[in-house]
Length: 231
Ligand SMILES: Nc1ncnc2c1ncn2[C@@H]1O[C@H](COP(=O)(O)OP(=O)(O)O)[C@@H](O)[C@H]1O
Ligand SMILES: [Mg+2]
Image (spheres, protein in one colour):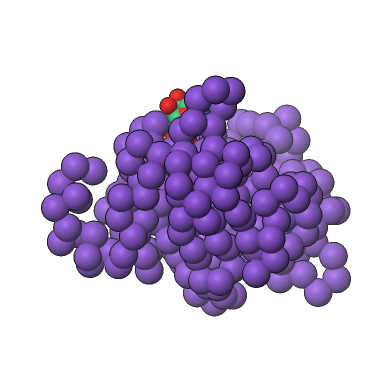
């Protein structure tokens, strides 16, 4: 297992929004994490990343207990978050965005150095000198994805990467996610409102409702379950 969340309880102030949450992600596996708005998906990803300290439960990365480890340690071990609403520097150019992150993450022997990103995502090569904030939503999201995979990722936490993208761009982005995960053995937890696309890509589907896991199984079983009708 690359990522294990075990009996997690987490929230904000006095409010608990995730309770007794358990799921595991195997190396190279793509898990779609689905559920209504407010179900606790973003809170779950933030807890895995160490941005929120859980009130109870355990987080393990490749078997190592990291429940209270700093974000930087998780990043160094290959956990990466593509945050809701993109994680780019809008006032820097594409190349500057990549170089800033690469300076910390893409040392010798890295799985993805800047040159690999430009090869993988030609749109970034074409826009190297463009201010990131002036690009289209789709191009910005490709850049956010590129920043998330720089270095040597083991498990990507992708929080609604397709939001605001035209259908053909969603297809492009998902093809890149598939390629990175399949060709390089990188795992991903994919939070999506685009349920059909996420289910088509995923090996497994976890559905949350009211801060709890209410389904954990194959996309096929998810489609066949009655639960499905509610999402
Ligand atoms: N920073 C915050 N402070 C207080 N409540 C929050 C905060 N972020 C999220 N919440 C609440 O936690 C619940 C779960 O939110 P979230 O994890 O963002 O759900 P999802 O990503 O599934 O839409 C919601 O009721 C939301 O209003
Ligand atoms: Mg969210």
